[in-house]
Length: 307
Image (cartoon, rainbow, N blue to C red; front, side, top):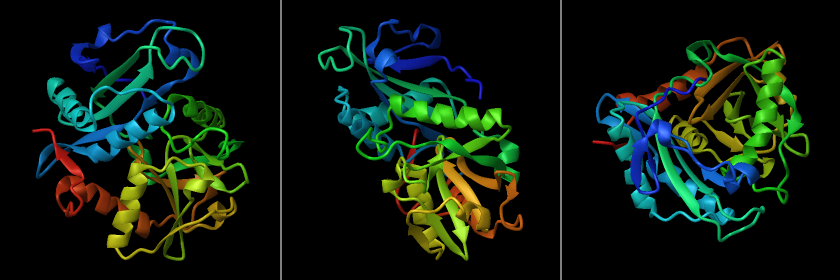
């Protein structure tokens, strides 16, 4: 998806023009992947105006991811939450994708170098449906990737850091080269993990099944939202290791993420999912997007108004 440029970016305490948001070619984060980031959405809600969805949860995960790799962040969690709102407001956006990025900056060369300078940027820009409006409405065609997610003890897959997305690049490129919208990765043991940038849910006999954090997934904030909403709808959710073959016998499958939101999967490896009907997915979608329309009560305080 092409980037739609906004006017300004917040970097290290001040707003700068989008075109001036540059960094040195020898920046450590560029060479060694020592950068932590997160992605949130601001929605133009019908009842509360522009709101950032689960602002605190996204910022807290940013701080967690950065702490794993010892990347300092100078502002507090509350300050970064406010900066995220300020960036949306400064760019006059009613809805947006928001990406805070903390990284190790230019200094000494080497993969560690904990004394290098560090930077924090917060970016907001217009963003539509990641896998397209048609995919949201009618589902997407995916494949199982030949690439597997790293096991626990290699790199921490629960941290949202730049280096982890090299795996996602391989998964997504392979899928697109084969004519699919996205790929689904397996964990190191051959059980299901997740998509290149989205969590996976399988509907089987009325139950909602999803891989566990032990299956090398990122514990997605949208994933947690769906689990919570499913509970409100009386849908049983089971987190467990899932074999690959369940994809071919599933009644419904969908992916979730800040970018993907709730995207149905129409086929896997050119095998149609179920009979094409998606009652559970539709109910989940309605509850999720109902948070933005006011039809679903926000019992959890997930909508943070930009004002």
